[in-house]
Amino acid sequence: MTVEEYFELEKQSEIRHEYYNGNIYAMAGTTLNHNRIVGKVRNLLGNHFLPRGCDVFSENVKVKVSDKYYPYPDVIVTCAPKDISGTYVVEHPSILVEVTSKHSEGNDRGLKLQQYRTISSLQYYLLVSQIEHSVDIYARVEGDNLWTWRSFENLEDIIRLEAFDFEISLKAIYENITFEPEIVQ
Image 1 (spheres, helix red, strand yellow):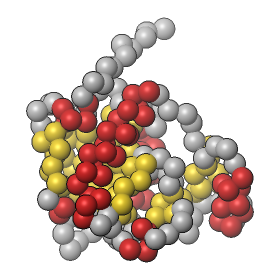
Image 2 (cartoon, rainbow, N blue to C red):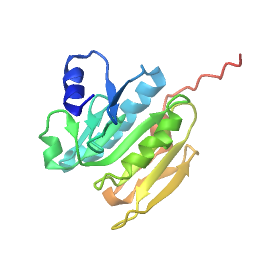
Image 3 (cartoon, helix red, strand yellow):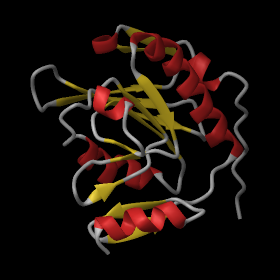
């Protein structure tokens, strides 16, 4: 399938698909916790970035990683004027967030991490768990293509995105989130 065919399919489809290397993959539905966490993260980022002329999108907006990869991150922050005035694809994200599940974690930490790091405008990639208090942050080292990784698991931990003078506590992300006990079969 070509990229053009993919875009045409997306315009007509009721479900979202990610495009990778000529193949399309239907996006699974989400859990209530996934949706709650995406909403909280989007709002927390929006409160900081919208007044600064940036935009924050969630779930239904694609990112162009390359001519062969168009995923739907859970939350996108972009400050690029071209993205803000665009229609349905962000090409210059500054921050990408994925809310992980047992099903998506391998892809979020594997292919997506590998591909997202190739986006020259990207400064931060956050992985937020929906099954436990856990946030991992990958941050680009300024002026380089090296990345650092930090993990946060304590509700009192403060996550700092220094490049944007932004900070948030795990407590704010997970406020009123109840984790379901794991069912052993």
